[in-house]
Image (cartoon, rainbow, N blue to C red; front, side, top):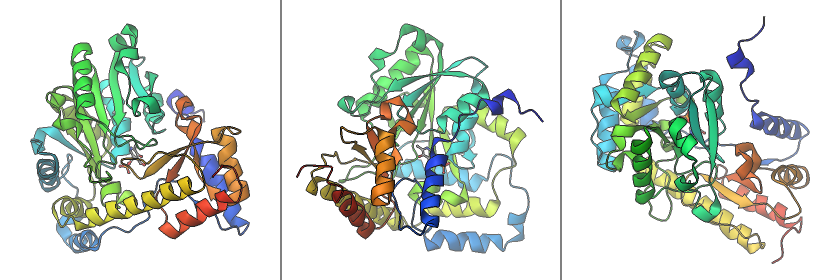
Length: 389
Ligand SMILES: Cc1ncc(COP(=O)(O)O)c(C=O)c1O
């Protein structure tokens, strides 16, 4: 059967080929240190698992969930935003429950855009934003995230045409892949741009909990007027090591939340009620697990950056997210360097060009293996004698 145009135009998964190369190397019996992926390595905290177990025993959890998710989880999401960011949200109209934030990223263009309308996407950026472009059959332009601008977009560089045609603008801070973070002024400029040009803002806050050196990442919704123009997508995947559970939520602009909910009324009944209960426990229960997780990532980051600098690799420390964005030595491209490291050092990293053309010249390293493996990876790279001490 011929596939629909929407499916045929889906981009190929750039990182599937990396996963294939890593799997083949492991099959050969090689000890690969995989710094290429973005999958949290720690388990979900026990109190969250216990809540799921107890709730799963309760027949009330075996029924269909309310279509738009439980009041308990939406209420917990609102309380979480009040506690963490001092943002007031109405659980009924300003929160939509999601099967992970990825689904919200894909749903938003389907829910508010018509064929041919324009999305503005970051380059480099999370590759799955492009899935939403193809499925909604919309067009897109990218804006560069450059190191010299601290990986924030320069709105002055948008053309009048782009500003006129754009319907949605996607942002993501702390940023995957660059580790860049947003500032209050930048979010204020974003609200102003959105208001002037009638653009909906989608802030992907997947790494919202992960800031280093005492920095707490700021929420877009803390910005005056943010709820008039956009939504923020929050996921439990990273904050609570719940990537496999598939739970997150969108918060903010009522019209955009309602649009997501209408689409979801037709696509899903909401999540397994026991998962919603456990997610509410994650958001409102003991948060010491989050503090220790961030400390763990920060220690790994410190080891990585120290080790890189020790071997003469000039790198910048990320301020947030669990990724480091490292420059590639002059003789290589992102891809040839990633291939070289896999071949010669048994170290897997993500080539920066997989995140967009402005990712060329970088590799992305995940902080998702233990410290001793990070040290070992850099020792192996040191042996290649690529850098001058
Ligand atoms: C930037 C970014 N956004 C969204 C997601 C999706 O997260 P989830 O669907 O698990 O909530 C990820 C996952 O890696 C990500 O890196």
